[in-house]
Image (cartoon, rainbow, N blue to C red):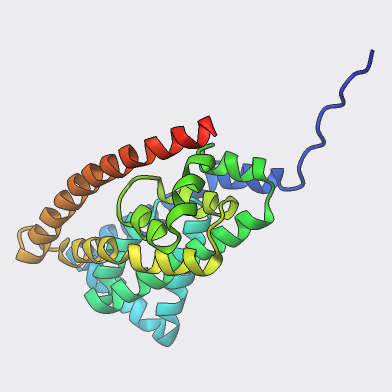
Length: 239
């Protein structure tokens, strides 16, 4: 009678545990909130102006540092909506949108490449175990499919980042689809951040309205896309 030896632990296991652990994101969130709290306590209503002065004090380093921070937060699975809004408040609409777009694209590509270097088990743990369904969708449509899953919440952003690494989609298709698909949401969140200081301003109210439409419309579109995928999934299972 033979006994199967337990599988050797993957060398990527520590990295997976780090990325899956909530603590890095908690530490980053606490640091951000502490910084905001310190500004509010010491500067009061001038906190935003003070934050802008600090960013301006970084000179030419401010924008690239923000892009790097955004990319690292994306790879670390940290919710980046706060950074989206902060870009609008600190850099303005157009520069802020450009920086968010660059950081999100860079972070998504970095996560994709990292996923290509990890084992399938590790990536499935990071992406929630829905890689097969994502692959079935991306394999048939390539760049368009990546753009659609970025535009509509058919799959979580993190799943697409890491899960795409195990699919047939190429790096070029993934990068182009991501760069195109995230544009609408980037502008919505940046507009929210720009108008947050004056919640009754037309910019802020319009951004909130667009965000609501985006979420509702995106959920509806995701449901339709999901239903269209089901027949193909069943056909693949039968074959």
